[in-house]
Image (cartoon, rainbow, N blue to C red; front, side, top):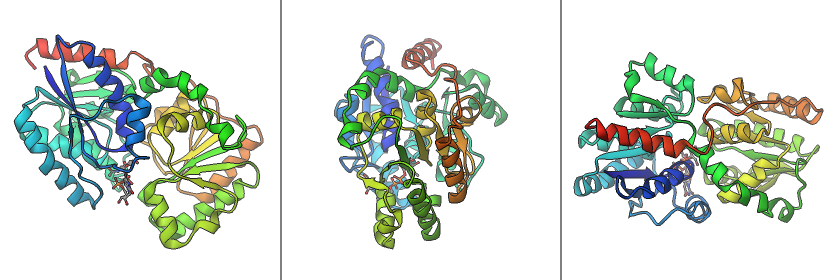
Length: 365
Ligand code: UD1
């Protein structure tokens, strides 16, 4: 079975890497090939993840780069269609909720190639998020929907997806984490940054709703500056956010916050694992902190990953800088949310997906 695995943006790489590796260990059954759309292209957003995750060079690099939603999605589709036509895979696999996910999903569906979606069924119920649109549409196009939680399956059934297409196989991103955990433990990033384990906060902010609006970004900068009076605050800055900080001249509003370049996978995971708490508007980081048992303050009004709140260490603070300062102070005063690791967030996810693919092929899928 020839399978096309697609990655394009930073959060895709750690979901595709373990699946690619597992499929390659069964060359009698699977012939995977790997496409990188080039949605993310800077070394710190792409190359470093290949090195850290041991990902092979992509079989095809589409090199689409940055643009507005319509142009970027269209460029990916235009570049991906000839690849599908030429290679005629039995299945296209996309992950997550970025523009590369929906663009390649649409091409597969229109070429009549079955589509599998990794991380299906997540819903924030906020259609102002471009990712929510990408999630809903990709799921509608998919024949195999691999979920990370039981709730995600409930969401899909409520939208009319047949139960036989939904496979609760667990969290591939957590499989990556487990595979590489010993290397996070060996990382010297905490020491190199003159930090101490458990005695700093880690920040990531890149949602357009938080960083594109100048008043909102300024308010977050001031809130983080206040928090940095109590403990060191490290903020690896996403290029979208860096561009906004520069354009608005907001650097000094961050006070003592340590703004730095985005980190590679191993160093970023080491920073997460050893933080006192994490402040984020990312999706995946809500899950990784839950796995590590590190408190997470999510500065968004909704989450597509509610299991991280109901079972994990995540607290939804809202897009509210004042509430962020209050919740940070609670953690610093010792009021720390405890959590458990959700079901099937383990090292067997890619093996379960491979098993589903075998059965699917056996039934003539
Ligand atoms: C994308 C995803 C988002 C994901 C995030 C992770 C969509 C709609 N959004 O958002 O869900 O959480 O990736 O990082 O797909 N840029 C660079 N270098 C790069 C990539 C981007 O400088 O390698 C800059 C460009 O100015 C670009 C901007 O960042 O215009 C935004 O990049 P884009 O891929 O459009 O969206 P993200 O904000 O990265």
